[in-house]
Length: 496
Image (cartoon, rainbow, N blue to C red):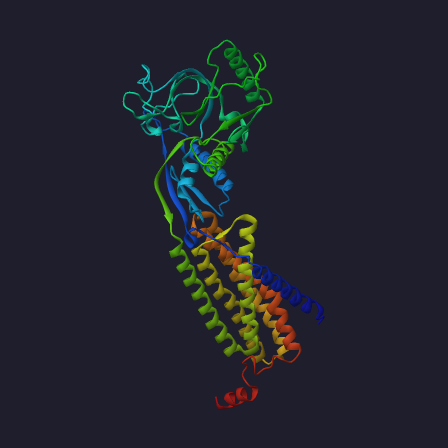
């Protein structure tokens, strides 16, 4: 037999093991899921406007909403978020996130943006202030102003004025015209620092061709109104609130307007610089990823403590190490050198699976859950079973009178067919479970499937050539593979 392929196979496996060890030694670690490192778990319910009936395509709308939420969460850099639909509810699980308020605001913000002309400003205490919505009521309880309608909207609470009669701080109200532009015209949104005193953070907007043309035409009209002594302001409305109402710059000429398809939103009134930057970043995020097709309300929103997850992880690792030690001790005691090969096989499995999970976390954001840990622990038994089947096949062949070298070759052929059949069934079951299940169960199925494939690879590329080499060198003998001594077998036959 040509032994060069055997040594090459062993050398490649050892090289990969050293690489995996160095990778983990440099600090690479698996990403942990919500149940292991804590985070945020929430369920959102769709909220329809008062009096509106549930649309026939509500489930399709929820699916679109999930895609928008997923885009927003991906922008936050969350590893392995679980965002799914359960009926008409949206389930969100975000591991490793501690700022619950920020996440709730980003996910729940509908981000319906529109630009409307300011027809009139209505400060607190004026005769018309009782018209329109109650600015002290929650935003989701106010009647929404349709895109093509004129009406009265509340301004931002950050720009509140004191009512001279009640001495209460109330937002300014604005009478605005129909929406000239909407968030659908936005191609990109980004944070920038404004010019002038204070250099406040702003959200820059890049508009599409249609939006750029409309924006230039509207700002041209507003510049003309400004030159005629009229208001000439543009209200920037976000989720039914007038966030700002800037006038056009004096340098903008009547008949020309602001060209180039860009606009800015100034944020953070009354906030310090860090808070301004955070608000501008979050607003740019939700505008860039698009508006939610439907309003959402959190029915449950809870922060999962990492303490329980850490204890569960430690318990899982401890259980795995104890199981590994017991299996290793038994294998070496019962199968001697073949048992040593089996222990090395299990050790390689553990090294490769941990390094592989860490690599998947780095490349695709995969996160290990407690169910995945359970799948890994179960797979230790699968890998040990493969080694035991091979060892028993070697012993059977030797007991049939074959030499150890011949027995190793014949035993592998039989053991490989058995393990291939068993692991194929496991892989098929794991695949079906992965695609039909949701949540942590998918993590268990994925780990089980990957481990079964890894078991076959290690058995063929390491256990097989290692046993061949040891048998060829005379290290494996009839005695240390546990075969029955021929003289004892003959004596036993004579007595029978």
